[in-house]
Amino acid sequence: MIEWSAEDLMIRDAVRDWIDAEVRPNLDALDSGELPPYDLLRGLYKTFGMDEMARSSFRSRLDKERAGEPSRADDDRPGGGNAAMSMLPVIELCKVAPGLVSAMGVSLGLAAGTIMKRGTAEQKERWGLDLLTLDKVGAWAITEPNSGSDAFGGMQATARKVGDEYVINGSKTFITNGPYADTIVFYCKLDDGRPARDREILTFVLDRGMPGLDQTRPLRKMGLHSSPTGELFLNDVRAGEDRLLAAGSGGGKESAKQNFVTERAGVAAMALGVIEECLKLSVDYARKRELWGQRIGDFQLIQLKLARMEVARLNVQNLVFRHVEMQRQGRTPTLAEASAMKLYSAQAASEVAMEAVQLFGGNGYMSEYRVEQLARDAKSFQIYAGTDEIQVTHIARDLLSR
Image 1 (tube, one colour):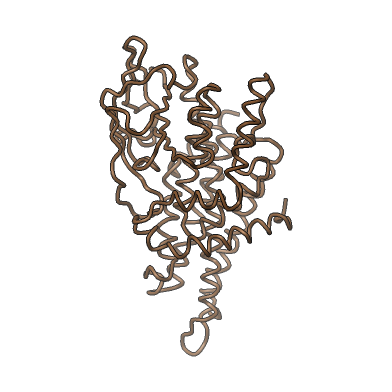
Image 2 (cartoon, rainbow, N blue to C red):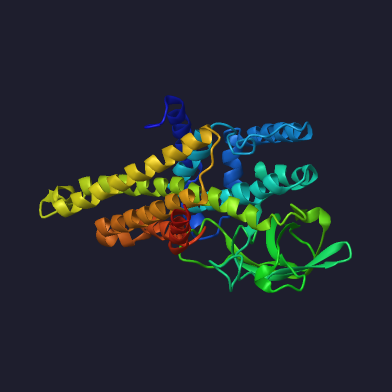
């Protein structure tokens, strides 16, 4: 794949028109945190029929599973088998408000994705469909205050078996959608007396309002303000076996690793949106802004910045096209491949956005010129879903193990 098809471009243009009408007028409210993103995202889904596609795919998948037939990898993907329908809205939204994609991606790809991969048919019926249609908001809770990049080894949240139930205690932080989530996929360790690092990882599905579950107000942060982030505190939360995913299989750690692949590969599309928008804004500014009687685009240092932005755009676009082709063939990147995609794309987006701020000069530091917001948002790509340093570790370990 070397370019978008005519059908892809029609989808892209329709999404752009919707964003211009619905998202851009609300940018200030989104960036201030005054407006949660969920009604806008539901509007996107309804406008393009993505909620109905999700319902149809969901029913098809469950019917196959109950008939003993294998399901396809794209059965519960937004847009079904149309890879462009899942990628293009991500790219276009990230040109304006990358936080919308973070909120949507965690709810769909991580919370719903975990339930659809690891849950029973009953669990999928109970929680999966409402998440896949965005009727409900999902959160994926693994990060803790004292673990960070050591997500599994440093995990301190525990579940202790008491009769037919588990009693869950612990806290999570930096949880996307945490303040507003209706459904929470929660990772913790089985408290069975073994040393902490040797304990089995369990995955539970929790509901908003359960006794002992406290969801905090949104945290203040550097960027990505259109994606609410919060903390979770659990004090003797009781959960039955019906809330345990992949019960008894030790599948909690494996399901989290699968989600890391999904999340990290998706960052390339997010990065492409930021890069394309920063490049467009920078080219327009370089044409119009004049110094010493000539437009700044005539100066070689400005031309160098624009050229490097275009190189980054082409490289990241090629990574996105590769991922689209893999999706169309039913293939999934390895963890190392997804980590490589994220490492390069996140760094490229952050560098391009900061260069755009520099190109705009004093205006670039002002919020009304938008590159300021995109630079703040792009920095988050190098931190969430695993820091740059963690991506390096995963890539190198794979290379050294061959």
